[in-house]
Image (cartoon, rainbow, N blue to C red):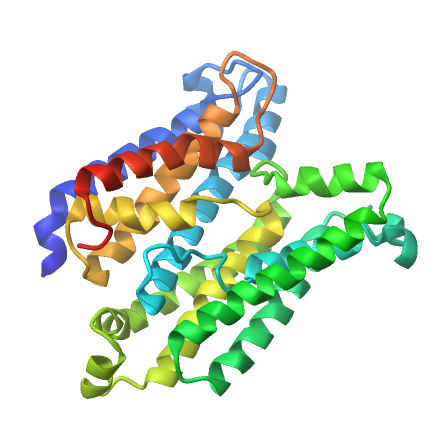
Length: 340
């Protein structure tokens, strides 16, 4: 088993992930002793009821959201880079995230025209609008994918969808009031702390179904690395496999953007970090590696965004790029190549 060759690395990473997950729950404007946090997580009563409310209703859902968002975007990025054989491809190249942004922009910036002030008062209105936008773009991309044979053409079509939706958002913003633009801007910053348990119950099943589905496409993914002609010679159904990869990546990107907003860097950079650590391009190793590393990276970024010892929280989208981009540049310069 090839995974046994990397057993030591996986054990270290999983242990690091567990530690970071607990540290993430410890961080916040209210100081809670680690012993009390253990008791609350294990279901025991704490000396303060307020601590239980903070841990159960806020910090625990936020830490779980960080794990799901980080790992989901990383898997989506890995799928896109493999499908397009392009190291600069990420989960947002298909325009799925842009579609989600357009859905939210229509709800917020077009609020005056469609009576959206009532709609935006609903807790699920923004995720619902983002999901509809993502689905419409996904539907358009799948249609286009079935019309063209060249995979690179799909990449260009996805980028054009992104440009098109960005233009519509700019026009909407031009005619909107300052308060509406500010509301949209705050959504675009991304946030891990806005999800309740009810929203996680919607987010989690879509995430887990998508992750499990990737286990069935490991062979096509490894074949795509060697080119479509080689994949055909191995009996891979190119069109079917391509559609499945696009749907899985789109679901992960769409659901993440819908609930946490557009979050940059993670999906692009984590697959490269995984290749550098494990020095392999085999997806049997890369897939679990990017899941763990994506979760670790997002937990670290969230810990920085919380500004320990401060009551302020920075936008997570800014931290992921500010913290991660220099590291990736350094890693790429050090390795001098993008693919193993």
